[in-house]
Length: 223
Ligand SMILES: O=C(CO)[C@H](O)[C@H](O)COP(=O)(O)O
Image (cartoon, rainbow, N blue to C red; front, side):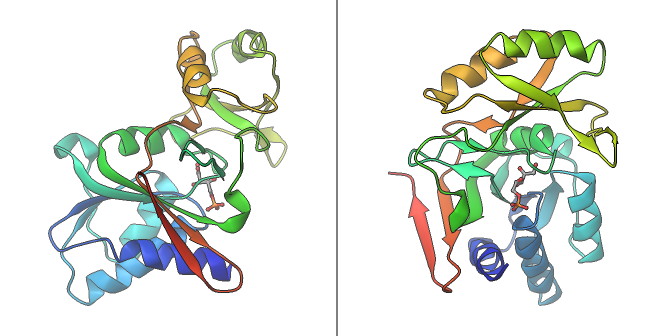
């Protein structure tokens, strides 16, 4: 928790007056949002696009002015968490179920800053099961098509019921084993009818802020 707080707060240092920013989802992004709230109360003038209903509620409670992505040209930066980060800054996201809005917001962002604790750094993506957002219509069919990519999968559930995303869709959590070519598998998965988006964020992150439990922080920048 200490590492998540440190990294979230460090990322907030990149925010400047007048920026339009994206706010991610999850327990690490939470600390960045709390810090942004404090900065706003101290006079920082920014506008923000949230990546989930949960983040929208938190940001509004912090007094951060929210805008729709549809109403802005582009975002200066976005701060978001991740479930895995490889040495090339490829990510798995969606552990919190917000991957679709997170990817749309990331794609509209000039600088994507990822905030993680040290446990998220991996040599290869794939230990964390890849979340794939799918449409509810005959979802078992889509699941069978996804599993043709040599993975096993489970429909995500919460409190015994199928988990429904902010967009009214479902999530398959897929075990691919080691993912050798993240960009390729991401492109191929998104070609399947019924797949709305997958949780691989390839070649999107610019900066990764890593928090360590001993209290130090590494800021890794794309070369
Ligand atoms: O992708 C996400 C939500 O969809 C989160 O950013 C990811 O799951 C990391 O969350 P946390 O910071 O709580 O570990």
